Length: 193
Image (tube, rainbow, N blue to C red; front, side):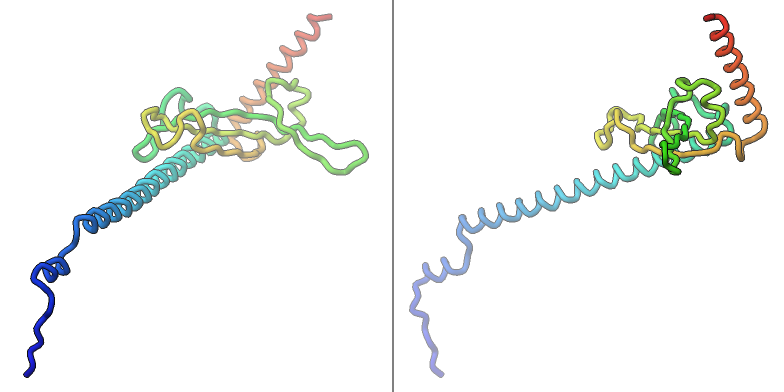
């Protein structure tokens, strides 16, 4: 049994067993860098998830408003009051246009352009059979940094026939408003002569 003795001194053996201060600092810096990258990615994913949740909730509000508007616009909630969806509050803006159909000269193609109802006379608006509504939904939380409350979280556009499929009382009321408006326009034309 040959026992081999180490030719290293005790100091050399102790130096080989441990880490130097420089190695410890380098390892700590590397670990801190990796931890900050992981935390940054997690934070980004949480913010993206929150934005997506707000967009989905805002779209749900827009769908509810469109359904109510087409069914009976008199029963819509007040635009100035917040609407709760999930844990958040939203408000909406609605605009309605008439799709005026035009046919280009020498062409069989018809196209429709959206024009504000108020800018059209009754004679121009009455033959048009389609309206377009745009619902813009905003997050009603100015303290929330996830979504800019000045920009819509969701926008929904629907084209619909203002007569077909609506309750009779709503259609009759809309037609009565058109008749009253036509009478006012006629009186203004007659008064201007």
